Amino acid sequence: MSKSLIGVLSVCLLLPVLGCQRSADAEPVSAQLSISGMTCEGCANGIEGTVSKMKGVRSIEVDLESETAVVAYVPAKCDLSKITRKINGMGFSATVKAENPTIQ
Image (cartoon, rainbow, N blue to C red):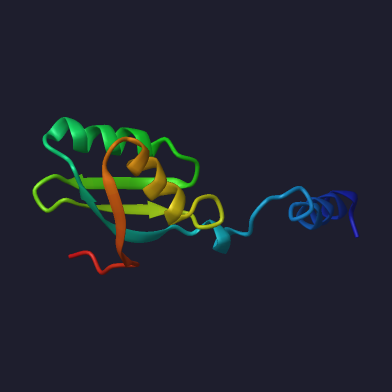
């Protein structure tokens, strides 16, 4: 076995020990949230800006009219309770409406 192949195999074996996730663990899932207390697009934009900066959040789209949001996140890095707590801490009321919704 060549030294370079041994080096590659060693790195692959060390990745889990170093805390690196398998790619399957990094797949985002989505959830639909109900958010009350928004009065304008500024509220929706503020939620999007704050939540999108959270570790593990891939995307969030807030709809002011329907008072909902769809968030895509990586469960190994973030969970829905952290996301809803962050929104609630901004003065809104967020609850989980559906996990893994079918988006049309």
